[in-house]
Length: 403
Image 1: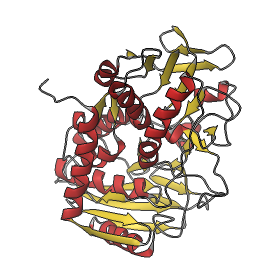
Image 2: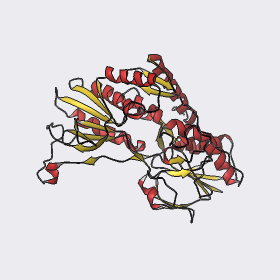
Image 3: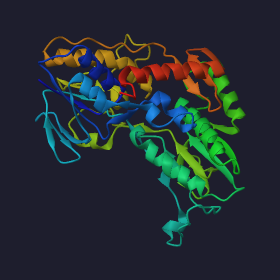
Image 4: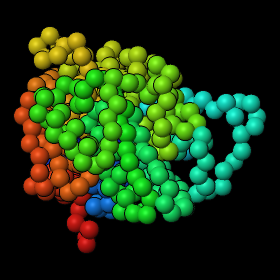
């Protein structure tokens, strides 16, 4: 049986680990992805804040494939045919399969750009490092995660060229955990990189509260951490467009900003729209509790790219699971069992989403906030705890660097 793993997300790392621990001579595994290194989302805030290197946040998928006896191809999928059991890769090659699984993450809807000068044909190109009031802000999109390091490096190069003594306001659009954590981490790193610049931040949240779904104590701790980081919170406002000098909200107001972190509006990968896979209105692949795609036997999806059809026995049957790495991690072992079962035409088991998960949110200052339901606490020890958890997770899948 030919098992094809499309993408190198967290759930597929568990699949490879399972086959490495329990090899199956009847199953031939191939993994296709754009890079042999896959970012672990839990460690990204530490990297953004400058506490570790990019390599410290990555799983070596090629090495993991070697342990599992799988073939790795460094070319992402760009087309998929369920009826023909074929996948076309970016390099033009075509792969066939018996059983396939998607773990390709998500991307986001970029903001509209409204630039009257450009539309009128009178805009001018600014030299790198120059500052002009009324110019469009620099955008840092937080998804897709696989290419974030390229965008982050480009932004840091722009910051390095700024003149000394200027004021820079970083606006983060998105009041969830990712938006809050990213803003505090980025502020910490840029303040360290350019202490001669006056940095401040603004968080724009469409919700009237931070961290929708969290208890009041985690929300209060997060608001306090944001204030400590010099961040002004604009709740109940939805950022909709980039305009000269900042971000325009859906009510037409303008929030001044020089750099915009876009951490909202997660959607499925665009190329999936050209497939016959069942997608929801945001482009995510609809799956059953077994993680098998609805109406597509032998095809599975997990992680951010999947939209689980929640049953009435689940805690929130009318809502979607958040797009967070913790769910991909929890799906991993069940996905591994079901892919093996599908290859042998055996019954599948169901994955039950956890009612509550532990969330650990870094604040960029050597501290972190722990949240589980209504419970919340913070401190430097929480950050050290988070780093130990993340290091153990990465060590689970990575060989020692000195091997």
